[in-house]
Length: 73
Image (tube, rainbow, N blue to C red; front, side, top):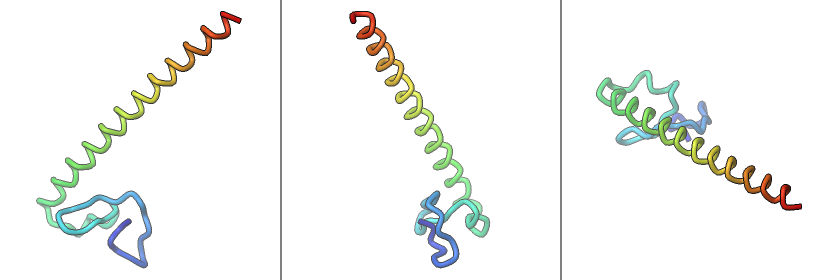
């Protein structure tokens, strides 16, 4: 949850060194924190891609198993 309470209730928050802010409220944050935040965002996006890929591969495996079951019947 964003640290700008009462005004911002966004869940997509990024944790800086001391506080949590959503992307819209990061504009007032000092430059060195912004670079750190960009790295965090990039890492999180890569992690989401990997989770999505593994989920898709898992679904492919499920579909294959279902097809095999149908062939047996």
